[in-house]
Length: 232
Image 1 (cartoon, rainbow, N blue to C red):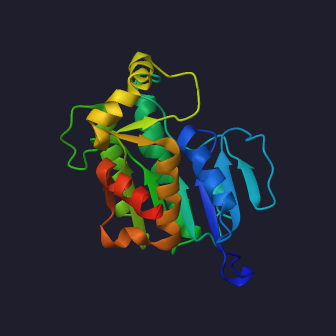
Image 2 (cartoon, rainbow, N blue to C red):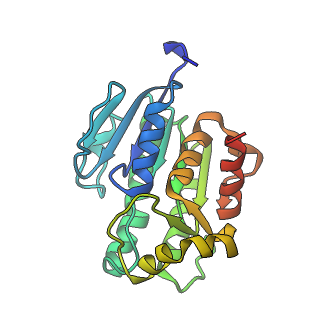
């Protein structure tokens, strides 16, 4: 179904070169409800589309230069991140917390009414008591987003994200989980989510605002339920 241009929304996706962000971009470009989709990342995507606006921004420690790009956006899907163990603790915090907070600051100034969909993670601890760096930093980022003043913030906390397409896994645990995924999915269905399903939910929630019924936090079980509802 085509949506009149006047009612189409503008979406910005951060981290579209990553696994989940890439699926979010593809999903959004296919939806007629979006008139434009702006991708902001540190490297080129290597694709073209009539609705795609691509912005390369290498220093997320300072997003001031993005203020004009972010004017008039209806929603953001934020998937920028890194894997635990692939960077130092200082860099993990910088990427997970500081980059998120800085981008949110500029988006809030340019588009105060935008909805914000954030890729957090299973175990994120907003209390600040966790001794696990990933959980602690994701919790800090969640708190900052909830305090930023956006009308709607949706926090997604997936457990194991199944890549769907072949890729070079970041570490042994991911290689192991990919190998045992069929069994793991059967035994622990609420501890896994497909990357494309997760991305679809993150895009749909800012488009339809379906998440308002369940509050701002979506654990893996909630994400699976959202995906199932989208399929009916």
